Amino acid sequence: MRAMVLTAPGAPLQFQERDDPVPGPGAVCVKISACGVCRTDLHVVDRELPDIAYPIIPGHEVVGRVEALGDGVTALEIGARVGVPWLGYTCQECSYCREGRENLCDRPGFTGYTRDGGFATHLVADARYCFPLGEVGNDVAIAPLLCAGLIGWRSLVIAGEGRHLGIYGFGAAGHIIAQVARWQGRSVYAFTCAGDVEAQGLAKSLGVDWVGESEQRPPMPLDAAIIYAPVGALVPLALRAVGKGGRVVCAGIHMSDIPSFPYSILWEERQLLSVANLTRNDGIEFFKVAAQAGIKTHTTAFPLREANEVLSKLRSGQVTGAAVLQP
Image 1: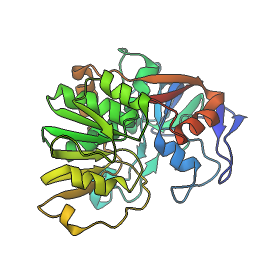
Image 2: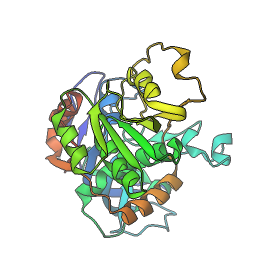
Image 3: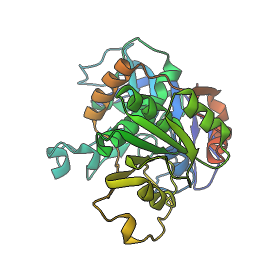
Image 4: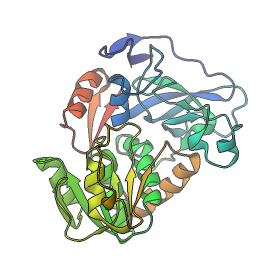
């Protein structure tokens, strides 16, 4: 196999050749056809997440086909197209798992963070955490759904059913969830960085109701706002944009510090919430919705060897929609 490997803190990814991985009991080996590049991959590479054991292969928006089965795997067949998401393992024993909240598992495993991920030609994944994808749709187009779509869906559910929805950060997750929200009959208000003409153009092309910069107020109070950009300074802005009883959902795994803000913008039963990971049930629900809503992802494909360049583009805000690596 070939892979782009993070070998040390702060180091660029290295292109390496390794023996093809062999799946153990309950696991499968997946031959990868596409892997989306997510903001979380950047958090791993930039050492913004704790307890990284090096070397590690990033990547957790994986689409590929099962090439080998470990002992005991019966739910998947060789040749089946599957998706491998961020949540790669849960203990199924802690109180959170027993309560159906495996996204909060005390002993989880995460693809591309604590387990080798998809910036490679092959990976080994726990068969229980692979989503069967069927044969409809293009691999590159599907890849961003495995995290941007799944976390986006969970954040939309947590945001509630309000009609007027704000989206701060109109990238991979934002452009997917805007389509879902519009399909649900909601009004969508897209907030972008100042001068980000490409993101604003993408939002307009998807038919959102209003496009503005993050510091602007929307034309009416929002029922809810979802923050996809990892910028803590957006939290007070979003709280000011939502009306009484409104919700602000922070959807990232990492965010810069939230500045202090007056209690008055939280008062009147506004809520500030966060999203942590996902559950397998989120995936089952979301892929049904994505098919019904006819979600179309805006993607740009790059060769696997260009992973460092793609991460640099993402870091500097030069990716519109979602970037996808192809082995």
